[in-house]
Structure formats: C-alpha cells, structure tokens
Length: 573
Ligand code: ATP
Ligand code: MG
Image (cartoon, rainbow, N blue to C red; front, side, top):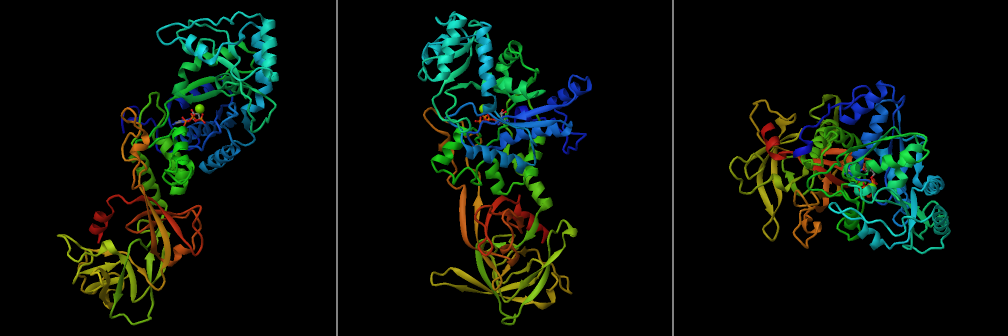
C-alpha cells in the first residue's frame, strides 16, 4: 500500500456497537452525544449513468454502514439532473447491486427529479431576492470570464438585470422559448472570490431532452451543485458525505442552505476516493471498455464493477470488509490490489468447499485395477474445517489428472508423476507410473500406472513416505466444463500513467482471459447452482458463472488462484 491508506483506521470486525473508528464515525457519534441530532440520516446519491464500481461500494458501505451502526437511516437518491445520460437500465442495476451488497433503503428511495418543482420555485426565490440572474452570454464567454486561480472573474454584462426582467426571462427559459445555450440562470455571489465555485455558479441550463422520469415536462435542468444541498436539506440529511473533489464546493453548498428557506442544515463531509492499483474506476473509462469491446460487458468478470466482481466470484462480505479495512482517508491514495486479493482469499479459504477438477486433462490408466470396477472414496470437503464433513467420490480404472502433474524428464526435487515415480492420488491411493503412451506426434497422451491396494486410505502398512499428492477425476464419472481463467485487466500498476498521446487502453493485458474447454470436473459440480463458490483443489477458487452456467453444461470462472499453490501442496504431501 502507498501513502494515504497506509494506516487503516479501522478495527477488523464491526458489530452494531463497535464499528470502525474513522473520523466520520467519530463526528456522527459526537453529534448524537451532544444532542445536535437525535438520529443520523445519510444518503447515497449515484448518477444513473453507469454501473456501480468498487469505489461506489466503499461509499455505500460508509453511508449505509453509519446509518446501520447508529440506528439511523440511509436514503438512496438518484441524481438524475442530466437528462441526456441517464437510463432506466442503470437505475435498476444500481438498486440490485446495493441490495446484493446487503443494504436496504426501505421506503427512502428518491430522485432529484422528484424535486424539480421545488428547485424551480427556489430559483425564482433567489431571483426575487436579487441573488440570481439570467445570463445571456455564450458558454465560451462564461467560461472565459470566470477567470482562474490567478485572476479574478469578470462580471457578466447581464449581471445587473432587474428582478422583473430576470423573472420574465427565466419563465421564458422554462417554457422552451429560448434555445439551448442561449441563456443560463446563475447565482449572484462574487466574481472575485478566491474560490472559483463562488464566481456566480450556474443554477440552471436549457436542455431540450427527454427525461427518463419527467418526460418532456421540463426543458431546463438544475445543476447538481444547486440541486444537491437542497435535496439533502429537504430529506433532512444530517451528514452529507461526499468525495474530496467537492471540498471546494462546500462554501457553495453552505451558501445555498443559508440563502434559501430550507427546513434543515446538513453538514457536508469529504473523504478520499477509493482507488486500486492495476484498476481504472472512472465511469467514462469503464464505459469505453464496454463500448469498444475490450470486455464482454459491464459484468465482465475482469471489470471492477460490482456486477463484474460478483460474476468473478467475489462475495458481498469481501467488498464490505475491504471497505472497512482501507478506512476513511482525507487524502487521495492508491490501495494495493493485493490487499483486496488477500481479503478475498482469506474469506474464500474459510468458506469454500473443496472439489476436484482437472483443467488440462491427461489420461491415467491403472492397469492392475479391474475393468469396470468402481470404488468410492471419502474425500474431506474442507481439510481445514472438519465440520464441513466428507463426500463420496467415485474412482475407477481410468482417471484424468493434470498435464502439469507429469514430467517425462522431471527437474530436481520433483515429487509429482514421472516415469517410475510413485504419488498419492488425493484421498484415494498410491499409483506408480510404469509406461507412457504416445500419439503419432510423439506427445504423451496416457500414463499407464499400477496402484498399491494396501494404500487405500492414503497410507500403507509400511508407512513409506510419499511426497507428492495430486488430484484426479474418474474418467467414467467426470462432467465436462468450460473454465475461464481470468487475470488482471491491466498490465501496469497505474493504467492512467501514459505518455503524451497515449491511452490507458495501451496498458490492457492481452492475456487477461483464457478459456479452457473440455475440463473434467468431479460429478457433484455438474449440479451446483450458478454463483456457487468452490475451491478446485490445488488450482484456486472458482465460481459457477452467474449467467452461463447451467445443469449439465457447467461453466466456471476462476475468481483467484491459490497463493504459492504448487510449492505449498508439495510440502504437505
Ligand atoms: P465516477 O468518477 O466513477 O464517474 P462519480 O462520482 O461520478 O463516479 P456518482 O454516481 O456521482 O459517480 O457517485 C455516487 C457516489 O459515490 C458519490 O457520492 C461519489 O462521491 C461516490 N464515489 C464515486 N466514486 C468513488 C470512489 N472511487 N470512492 C469512494 N466513493 C466514490
Ligand atoms: Mg458524480
């Protein structure tokens, strides 16, 4: 991990009473203790212009988590102030994703568009108070006259229009009598303010677009910066938590609350956006990945979207836990993706049953095993958790093993199969490789082995030491599957780091997906429900694909590999 996140301010487990001690939780706690607020009310305000990603998950866990912990409530409010970009598809997916994460807004579902009438009325109020005016300058003129960090802004020639003229013009804007870009409504604050956000910010602009909820009722739309504080106040939000880029907007947020007859005065609090190495999180970029077909969709298992992570096999608990572990920072930083993978592995190790699967099959025949004879062995479901029990797995003369578990010319220290070598077949017996069968090209296509009937329970009366243990699947019972192996989508730690004229797309990992057909699974895996998570012994954690897996036609995605898989197993023997 680097900089801002290097000291996670959190405990590892949160109950209702002892949650993470981050600075926002402390503020809330104080406000409840001093009686400033009786009940904490937060909100999550997504713009429905894309699918939620893991950064949003952080914000969701923070807002809903605070409400849960302090017995308050969290509203879900869609910021649908921009009619051009928003779609019902996103509204639906966002709700589904928040529920999947384990949170619920109850009856508190709102849309910015619910407030359009009130927002309009209060814009009129500001005009009447001499605190807003219609500016007929062009967009370019307004941008130019705003000045910059070093130079103050220049007042618009339309700034001192009379209240009556402003009211009439704003009314004409609303009626659609002016064209897009012909006029905007601006707050009249201070063109020479050191804070550029206070240099007469826009309140309304003309957009002759169809809105997904209000249809063609409006052709003027409020700016987010104007709408947001008002929505917060109307919903009596106590703590309005947003990301750091809004810090400079806080004085404006306050200005609206101070200059409008709002029923409450929420407090805006900023925290750092969550970012991970090897990952991009901007919605614009994620949309580009989808549109240009670099991934198969918003729910592609390589995407950092909640959908993508879910399809990859991440359980919601892991997203909640990582949100807590990284803490709440006041400075932007990048979290090592390895931390997320660590939390994931830890969780899956505890919760996943073990199954056997052979991804790149090599035939193994036991020549001294009677033709057609089947025995069942008891195989533990989780060697690290005896309470998970055992299952019966069929075993016969013909088996599949992993190509990788055999070397014709073994390197030094090789404990797996090789000519003349003996290994343990996991939870079954010992076999010795006696003979190789080759195809016309000279490739080894089958190992002919003998077994030791004395070794049935994985040990022998002479207690001879067998260092290598490999997994297997009975050929007569195996279920065929497609298995997809996923790697990181980007090759470099910081995909945004590109030379002049380059693109983050230049850093895409060309090997982020490998699709294997004809994998052999132990029979029980053919029947599991989509989204079932398992550990394929010695290979990693896999999940039955949410979309394409079906009974009789299994499709599994690799969630993540096992750390030092081979080395570790070898030692265990
Ligand atoms: P993006 O930058 O990906 O386009 P956004 O901020 O425009 O995201 P919104 O729909 O406005 O997307 O976000 C909803 C809420 O989620 C906001 O309160 C925002 O601050 C928060 N949020 C967005 N990205 C992150 C992040 N990376 N970490 C934490 N919170 C985030
Ligand atoms: Mg936003």
